[in-house]
Image 1 (spheres, rainbow, N blue to C red):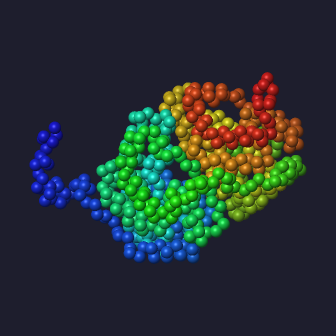
Image 2 (cartoon, one colour):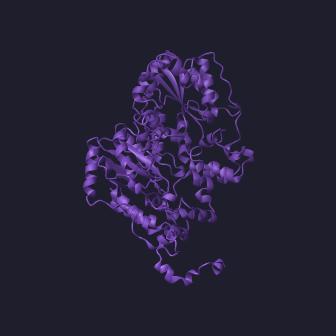
Image 3 (cartoon, one colour):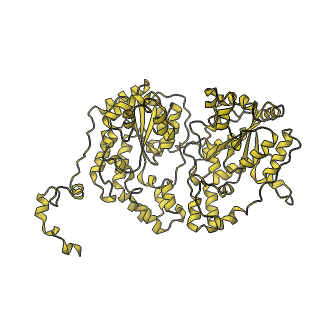
Length: 615
């Protein structure tokens, strides 16, 4: 109807359209440009690009070149960051240059002109300025791109040919990427198995998340992308950029790719962590061939870019032996000593003799406040929840005057740090606690603390994962349980951290842990070994009785242990929905298995207590 009233009838103006640059007479119609132009708009690939890449690799091997990951969200960046930390120093948060580096390292904190050049993507001149400066501190950095082309600072303008810059791009199939866990998507849509057809079609038509996401990041094209009608110039631009990067790795076999990268870069004796568990194929997860084909068509240029990237990948995943899975199901952390029981006996005896320090590996909401209160009755402890904090660092010697000792207090303690800190802290306190908050410390693994130190008694309190998730938490913003809607409960069940194998993640020493029901089983194996090295395990389900028994074996007399608060109804009853309960149990199944393993080591077996004596 609107066309009936249009000023110009386009169907009657073919001659004008054909003779005009853009078909509308104003020379500025982006849509018409997209439909007619297929020539790339970005710098060409140098003829000697292979020689440049060889020089970049040699310069990294000689300690000159900086390595940089062009990280598309959900393309394995967390895993790669954790592995690169084993090769050498990297920035703190996700290996990206951020406020911590800009505010504390020279020349960034005093030279605004250099700090300004850190803005992503780097300009050509900026590349040449920041690369040698960053390399003084770090061997690897990452930049994250989130499906939006940087038109005013095009990625193609970065000096990827700088001989002291090794660039890495990890490619991933676009449909697999869209199905990666995402806090924003999980907040909008129910879990996969609960989605309706309408949910799935809304998901498939997301404006950014399911619309040629990686291609948009590399396209340098304003307004990219437009589903199946995306301008093919975007693909040509991205191909040229991918040809300029030093390395392409394939997320489908990222562990093997990092091993091969290590060989080329002269890195030896690096223990490789297994990459996350593979999901079922995307077509199967979607459960609808029509939907799958629609998403493939909508993202067809992104798929073509991925296939081009695979042609350049360091390891061709489909050429790997099929009988050798790309993921090892073996633990990646130190083994449990054969004489561990003797070590535990010695630790307990040394505590009774006044030599050993007691330390709680306190996972949030695992009874740490209760245990701290009880431990204060036994002797002196630090002030705030029994943790070494600013009050101790600023007021007690040798902390306030010896920076080297303060640096060792960063959690988790290193092996050498454990041996330094234990005797120093024991002079002041008999008990301290650390707070573990559902995030693995990949750069300072918990497993590397010296849990076998004969003057350290370690304690872990275990709690059922669903009970832990239901504990009130100030950081989780939901209505009271009785007022929650079904939507509230499902959002709660899909929290990215709080209800996602929280305790397991803390003990896993596994980068990127955890991924719900698809969590890498290596995390569980790591946690079991750590729990076997801990001196004493207590069960939160009968913590009062456990502390009484702990006092007995530690030689503590005449101390009254208060009874804990009354129990809540069972978690299944609190959730009020069997489907929801079973979903959370499945999502946290490895955390549940870790809890059951911990219970097998617990000082008191709660289910063996007389039933007429409530805990």
